[in-house]
Length: 492
Image (tube, rainbow, N blue to C red; front, side, top):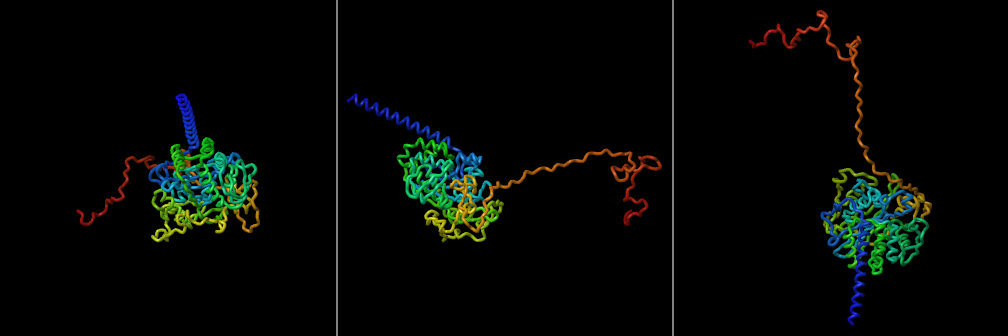
């Protein structure tokens, strides 16, 4: 019996040592993975925050940026990650009180004010202008909600993440065909509920052949949910090493390892509910160059802003706090704003939200009927591409389409819409140059020239013709003194 207990104790000891070594290995791998993927911004915290955020205690936000980057596209366009536009812009708000995550999908063509550039453009251009920080600032100006952290995912990384999780369950809305992650050949995905592998999942979130960018945005929201739910499952925990490796190679973020660990612990041990919405809006074609933009409904922006600010324990948003609402009907693409419009301008008619009985038509901005852009007549950017025979590529609004063949629909349409021109960088005032003053060369006067005393140069005093020289004793008479004048009356 004693021998048995010794053997049992020895086996348990070996198991505990093994578990300890595994935990230590996972911890080191985790720390290394988080450190390798860490990429801080220049700001300490959002200007919309008064105090630092503690993810252990406070509700917080994370901006999810999807960049459709691949090695093939990087080489073809000669771009690094910072040079790509964002195809996915989702603001996730973690409500610590309700164990709820609210996801807001912002269409890539949404006309947005860029605070760091002081002009309006598509929100997808913000990342190319200044990386994740510019995207964070653009989202803050659109929603008046602080962005606490960001996570940037290279779209092909979806392949590795989903494969590392062993696939994800997803209801594919229709048959689709999309380029592979390396942009060589295509992959077909059939309609219906199924377990998608990495390449199939990427095809679902990239494709917009049948619908538009708005439909794709909704699928991206659903895919984020599916991946997060799968990552929480027991089976996924056995693949933790693979997941950490994927994160280290394909994901960039500005969260410390402690923050990531706290977030993972919170998510793993709580039952999290998801609430999604996509910003409602309308088409806008900019006449000077025919470019397509998406105009966000200011009422929906106001509803979303107030819901998220309440979760974050911030004061409600007033209508004039939202620049798109305050300048509604005034701003336009590529417009720079002067100090008056930025700081002083207010609409002549006060917004109804200033009244006590105001009810936002979108309620809290989330519990609204599903936004069917096709029923409402919202075309989306895909129509622009089809009518020009162009599709989406990694770094522009024209080029190759989603089938990878460079050809669009080319259907008959009487409306001729020009392709959006190449993006022009903001105008910069040329540097001031001090004018160069060339002083004329000094010429020594020629005193022997008989014409010298007439009008050129310095006139010498006239010579006394009697003394044949200067009169050194000559005194200039006082012009005000008259020797023969009578004294003034009354003067004695």
